[in-house]
Image (cartoon, rainbow, N blue to C red):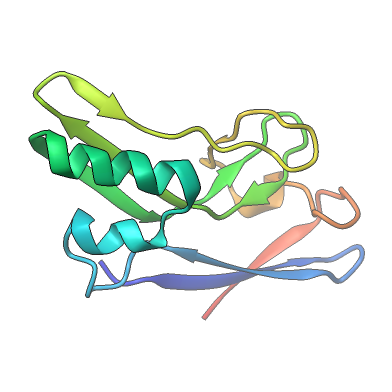
Amino acid sequence: MAIKFFQTRCNKCHTTENFKIGHDDSEESLDKAVEHLQGKTQIQVRSILRKHKVDTAEFGFALYHCPKCQILYNPYAVRVEYDDIMVFQPFYKCSVCDTTLQKATQAIENYACKQCAGKQLSRIDY
């Protein structure tokens, strides 16, 4: 899966923000993708790779939102299923209110601008 790029633009305050979805084609394995992870998440995934049998792994840039603030985030997300019954999936937090983020499922127009909190975003694909 190639990385897809897009930009959001607030039609109220004119703030723009760049986003990406997916992972680079060179990151075909979790071994390579783990380099994008940070802190405890990287340590935990490396430990799983060393000590356990990984069944499936999903990884790449993803679009999340804060259910309280409605602000968009773009973490490099990972989900690892291992040893037939275990799942590792980190939680991501909103930098404004510390609420746990959820995967974004709505149209961009339904989310808020990080700068002015207005819901006047538009999406520009490139």
